[in-house]
Structures are given as C-alpha cells and as structure tokens.
Length: 424
Image (cartoon, rainbow, N blue to C red):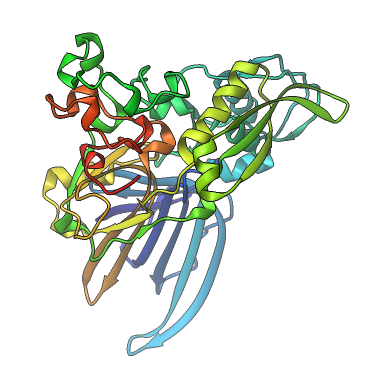
C-alpha cells in the first residue's frame, strides 16, 4: 500500500484523503524505444487551497519502496457536496524525467563516432538529468555535426537503431538500457552465432545435451537469472495469449555508414523459409550505425525474432493480496528488463510455464469505504525479442539432437516447454 505522497517537498496533510493513485512504469511493448513514467493521484480535500504548481516534484512511496518520482504537469480542481459540506477533489498528474527530455536541447557541439551507450551517456549528461547506463558498450554510432535538438528525439532515434530501451526508474533516474543490459550475463552461444544454414536436423543425431562442454553448460542465461516466479493462482483469470502474422518480417535491408547523397550502404538478409510460408514481408531500416558488422547484427536480430509469428502474453493482472511477503516485495520491485516466469497457466496454452520479460507495469490503488485495494498489471514481452535464450543445462540431459522437432530454432527455445509445444 502507498504510505506517503509528497508534492513540492510537502507531505499530504492528514486532512487530505488519497482517493486513488495510478502509476505507470516502463513501456507498453518491446518495440517502443522511449517511455516516461506517469503518476495520477486523486486527492479529496476540505481545507485551504494547497500551493501546488506545475514543475513541483511529486513522489509516491509504497511499503516496499519508492514507486514514482517526477514533476507535476497538470492539476485539476473539481467540487463536490456531501452531508459534511463542500469539498474539493484535486487530480494531479506528473511525469518522469524522460518526458522532460523533450524540453532539453542538446547538440551545440559535434559528436564523435562512438558506441551507442557512450552516445546515450553524452546526451543525458548534456541534458543534465540523473541517469543510469544499463549494459556495456554496443554498436558504433556515426559522428554527428552541430545540430541542436531535443534530447528526447536523439535518444529515441538512438534506441530504435540499437534495440535499446529508455525509461524512468521509480527513484527518478533516466535509464538507457542497451540490448546487452537485458541479456545479463551475455550468452555467446545463441543460434544466431551458428552458420545461418544450420538446423537441428543437421546436427549429429548421437549428440546429447549431457555431452555439452562444461564451460558452456555452466553459463547462465537471462531467463534463469533469478526470475520472479508467479504461480498461476495469483494471475487474474484468464490470461490472454496473442499471435499475429502482422509482426512477421522476413526480408530486411539495413542502411549504415555515412550517406552518399541521400543513400546509405546497405546489408540485406532474407529468411526464405518464412517467405515461403508467409509471403515476402519486407522492411528497410535507415540507421545511425557506422559499421557493416553492426548493421548485419541488427538485421540478424530482426530476422531471428520476427521471421515467424509466435504466441506471447502481452500483459497479466497480478492479485497482490494473494502473494506472500517475499513475492509481494519482488513484484513491486520489478522494473523494465526484469524477468518473470508464470507457472501453471490454464490449458490449452502454448506452454504451461512461460518465461517473460517485464517491459513495464501499471499500478492502481483505490480507497473504497475505508478499504484500500491495489492491483498491478505487468506488461510483458517474449524473451526471444531480447535474445534471452535458455541455459544448456536446463535441457533434459539425455535429450539428443535427433529428438528435437526440426522446425525449432535456437531462438525458439526460451523454456523447456518449447521442446514439446506443437509449433513455434
């Protein structure tokens, strides 16, 4: 439950009743490069007019820690009447630091060629906001001439080109989370690291997972790095699965390097099996990437993650009152990029246990007849989109290559359930 709300450094006094709070963190989906946190509180008040102003810092604290820190953007005052007389209802909306980056103009000096995370840090430093860089240096980004623009637009373009995420932490810092920041620790043996023509059917049928070198078998993957486990009994009935052919991309060209006139050099990648099944679904991405290798990696990520339609859970409602103390604290501490596993999902389902990555959440707390009710909705993404693959030692030890369904690729195997599910 929420314990304290402050506006402009002043805690709401006892005469103010927090009737409702809605707080959003992170982004709606994995494809959204930037997302500002937003908090809206509804306060009923019978006393003197409070001295709240746009730009005041609004903080919301929960029994488990801080839920929100941002600045007030809008205030509304409505009036009501009951048996005790008239009262005012204040509706106060605040946004996190990402939203204010749209007001911070940077770029008065040229930028050198540098890794994406270094470019993000440069922009955030110039914008003079508290920030966190999550993930090591990644793709090389082209140098940039003097061209002053809002920091938000520069970060949005950078994140889109590098598959990064930009969001607010509940404590107020702006995070630039590179793809490697989600793949903690980085797993070098992904299917995309093998020659493109390799399939399970092409592996030696006598090999088993038990024969994997110890150095490989002991490497953990993000999906097994301390995920928050949620039993199906705490998920509001019933979770909704979605699959759409509209997300399929099987032919991509990625532009890279300095433009010659209006054109960039390009690299191209096609998944012919997907073209045969879905028809050609083509996209061109012009980017700020400086090097061919980075453009090839960007194209490979798109094809690896989007060449087939896949079942996924978009969001789930978690009944907080059904969690034990440890689970409750763990769920309330989730931020964009963290991992969860939902267990015992109702049949039929693509899998009974489903690993997912949290893209964001929406928290609602309301007061009703003296009782406070709270609920959180987790906005989830398929771990494949963050290249989060399984550990070798998570597989059945006697499972051989010959026993794998030939249609499965390494990227499909985000949980052991995918070994038996009837298709990717």
